[in-house]
Length: 358
Image (tube, rainbow, N blue to C red; front, side, top):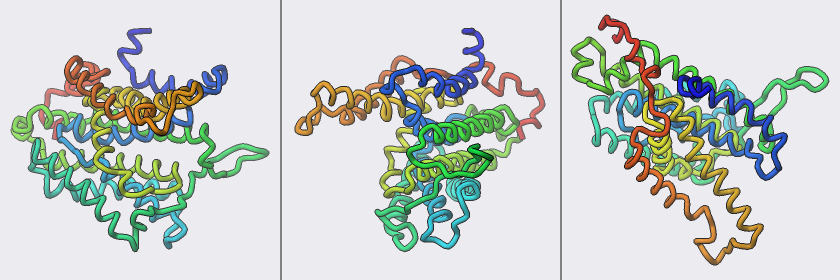
C-alpha cells in the first residue's frame, strides 16, 4: 500500500477526493467540508498553471493572478445578461481557455528572453497593470462593482427523466463534483504534457537553457507554449471562481497576494510536482478556508471571540502562519512535501535521440 502511494500519489489523492462525500455521511455535521473544498480545487487549477511555467520550465512568474482575473472577467462578459453575448457556461468556459492562452502568448512574446529577477519584475508589473485596467475601464468591466450576476453551470440530472438543471450556489455537493471533475481533467492533461516531448523540452530548458539550444530545442517557442498553457489554466480557475460566486468581484480580489499564494502552494507542495500542487493546495487553501473557519466557529461557541480584540480572530493570524510555514519549509524541507520522484521525471525515460526534444 505504501509503495502504491509513493509511486502514484496523484491518483491516490484524487481517489480520496472521490470517496470523501461518502465519508461525510458518517461524520458529524461540523466536519462536513465538501462545500469548502471546491475553493481548494479551484486554486489547485491555478497552481497547476503556475507549476507549468515556474515548476516545469523554470520561469519565475509573479503575475499569475492577472490571468485569473482575465479569465474571470472574460467569463463574466461572455455570460452576463448585461452584455450581448450570453453564450452560456460551457461555451464560455472553453472560450476563456483560449482567451487565457492568447493573453499568456501576448505577455510571453515580448519578454521571452528575460530571465530570473527581470522576468519576475515584468510579470509583477503586468499583474498591477491588469488590475488598474479592470478598475478604470468601467464601461466594460463595471469598475469596482464587478460583473454580476453570472450564470451557474448546467449539468445533466435525473429526476423523473434526464434533464438539464442549473447548479445553485448553495448546492455544495454538486459544485464539489463539478470542480473535482474539471480538476481531474486538468491534472490528466498536465501529466500527459509533462511526459510528452513538450514536457521534456520544458524541463530541459529549466535545467540548462544553453544546452537545450545546443541540442536543437527551440527555446523561445517552448517558453511561449509554457506561458500560454499556464495562462489558460489560470484563466479557467478565474472563470470557475467567478461562476461559483456569481460575480467577478472587484479587481482587488486578484491582487499580488493571490500570485504569492499560488507560488506558496507549489513551494510547499514541491516545485515541478503535480502531486505536490494538490497537497500544497490542500494545506494552504484548506488551512485558510476550512481550518481557520472551523476554529473561528469553535471560539465563538466557547465565547473566546471578540470584535474588540484583533488577536481573538483567527483570520488575522493567517498571513503570520503562512509566512512562518513558508520559512520553515524553505529551511528544513526545500524540496517540498511531495517533490518530483525519479519515476515522475520525464528525463528519466527520455529517448536518447536529441530530435525527441525538439
